[in-house]
Image 1 (tube, one colour):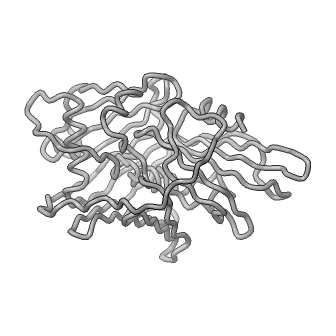
Image 2 (spheres, rainbow, N blue to C red):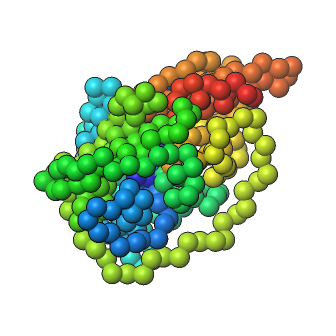
Image 3 (cartoon, rainbow, N blue to C red):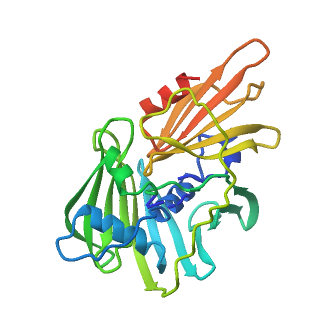
Length: 326
């Protein structure tokens, strides 16, 4: 459900960059990213609707319903149980995502603010400059269809409810694919599977319990007063990926700060961190856990060494090419 979880796919506590192998926040980033994504207008849905119409209806439903449920998150044989709630009011939307097993972790998302708590203690609160914090399914159908094929793949049943299955297939090998199970009544997302370029399953979100109610409130108008993004020239990006958020001098540990660049193609997102090379900097290498990849590149230069880290839900070879371009 990746901003199909906002998002928050991506908002991990960036302080975890120094412990990148653990990735405790990748689900929080991802799922808030999935569930918060689309910004399209709704069109009436009739039986036999196209994939376009289902996604339009889904995008509207994410902003009009209160919902609450417990879901199971699976990747590489590891299971996590997560509680998710989403509330809509005249003041806007807010979401809460809490791990129900392991170390108590919680993500709170309201407006463009992401707060992370561990064992009840706030450990991070970030406000990201940019028009779209989470990025998932936020590009509008024309842009999405430029880089992805959309298909209705059939029907099914999730958590006792009838669903439509929508396939989101990339048109190249520089991005991942998604399979979405949308509730027939509400068009809310009940299950999501992330697929690699060979259509192999990388990770799955699925509700085990789910309740929802529609709120008859006017949609909050988007804030158009965001600080303008800086004019940043990045060496190489896959086609369609544009800068969606920037943060400079972001604390990634008690002593380290990095510049962060969030990129999105309207569906998928990833982040680039650039920081000075230090004795205790991350070692060069690659890591993958489910759909999340991490590529660390160390650039040695006279008195100006840097560490470039690419983190996100893109194919490993794509992340490696992004890092190698620096």
